[in-house]
Length: 332
Image 1 (cartoon, rainbow, N blue to C red):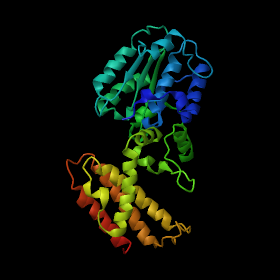
Image 2: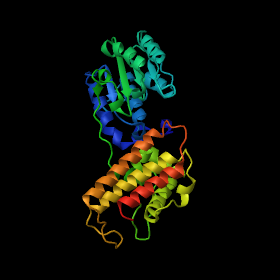
Image 3: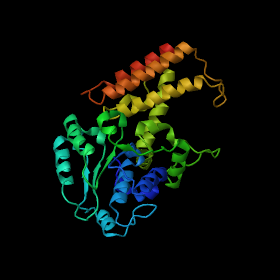
Image 4: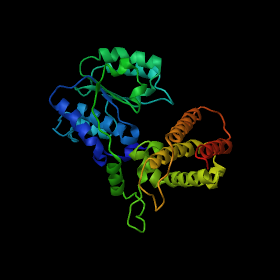
């Protein structure tokens, strides 16, 4: 779990443009009453949401954001602002009682004489009753009420929620920008003997984003993912499980299968390349086999999703099944 208190807005450069757009609107006095931030937590979504709340509540707003010195900013810094109402998931859901309490709080007079701000993180976790309870406030929020909704998965939101919000434009960083940022954090592995840096961004879709990748690099998690990739390559070539794949636990299987999914996709991409890799001839796969391998990768991803709710699984048997299928498709 990423601790967002470890990060400031200035430490996450890819948030700067979106934050400035939000500031520009409020500085000109053309603010909307409801904003949707489609920025994953692993990209700093909560950091951006907090900065937007600071922008709205600041009593001496500057062209580049909150002043940091007024009474409102000082209260926010102390996590004690009476007009900021934060709602987070309670377990896996945001429940209707949380939203009812929020809506009631927003009807009260602002204690600091400015706006009242509702900040809801991971808003996609609203259950149906909670989402319906929020709709009336989104339609008629009242004077000087601003709602800031942060989501990791906008596709999981009800259209009735998204249609009532102004979505803040955001451009996610590319892999090169993430690699540069990680280098600035002194988190990249040392260059190899040829002076080439190891590209750690290959596993972004597994860990979720640059902040979670940074956490993985600080711990042993990234090295474990790298081990899975190496062991899948060896196992798929030999036709049987090897090394770490022989001892996978139910807690590790989803990570291992996510890595397998990436490996299969990359295997097909390499088969389409005419570039020789490490002095070896390019892979030669006919289109039918390529299609079957992509289909296998899709099956692996579907299993990853099922494993989130399955009570138990024979990890070794499952992995061996995928290895045998791979060998049959590639005539190994």
